[in-house]
Image (tube, rainbow, N blue to C red; front, side, top):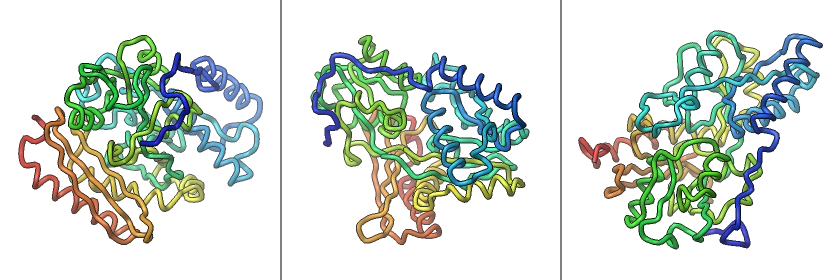
Amino acid sequence: METLCSAVVFPSFKIRTSPFSKCGIRASLAIEQQTLLQTKVALLRIGTRGSPLALAQAYETRDKLMASHPELAEEGAIQIVVIKTTGDKILSQPLADIGGKGLFTKEIDEALINSDIDIAVHSMKDVPTYLPDKTILPCNLPREDVRDAFISLSAASLADLSSGSIVGTASLRRKSQILHRYPSLNVEENFRGNVQTRLRKLSEGVVQATLLALAGLKRLNMTENVTSILSIDDMLPAVAQGAIGIACRTNDDKMAEYLASLNHEETKLAVSCERAFLETLEGSCRTPIAGYASRNMDGNCFFRGLVASPDGTRVLETSRIGSYVAEDMIKMGKDAGEELLSRAGPGFFSS
């Protein structure tokens, strides 16, 4: 296990409001709206959720567009449009209980289809395996670190937590893998909210530890809160974890051209492999599924997939190695999914 910080136990968490706090969001939007009124209609409107992490990803997208296209670097050329999704509105229930697909994308997709925005920036792990009609997702930005971070005030790792300790996570993937390795721990499923909210709950003693995607903490410049980093062997990541996806309308050639210039093909291929695996399993927020495709030392694709029962008593894993090309990688993902479906049998995810 790799340790990110020299100190293991923290006296407190640095929960920044940063440029992406609620006040920052309001101020940023007010400035952008004022700029638009004073100059001209935006050439490109970016749709995004309003969480600090979502805004960080939207601004990363904006900055890359401005750097690649001079006309978009002009003042007022790009507008950020914040859209509240179902997943943002319902915070009192675990995600698995809300059900349905596209909890964090549906309203943004609708705004895109209705031409209220021109492109939509998503965390790829939130994007359903199908895309809405009239939309395409031609762009993935370079992937961040896919691993999960362990954060606690009282322990250096999951193994160091005392029996009965509560770990907060809304992810069934994390829950099942935690309980499989450490059945003496308890997991609080309804541990929802943005990164800052979850760190605050942890500091208030609601739970003794939590796991967060390291990618999000890096994008928010909040890695000082990390106690240790879990290896891929200890915690296989969610499908598409650490990847940003950008969608546009099917018939919008100009936006597709902009996005093509930002696409990171290695990331796109890896995400396609993982999503083929997920699609084959018909996965949702109710199913503990993990998958990760990466380029190995030989330049080939190494894929690892996992399904688990929600209580962690059963975990099934598989892996594939093949050429790092689209057709082969998608086939690998599907084949791995079919294998685990066959091995799991009916009723596996309901245990």
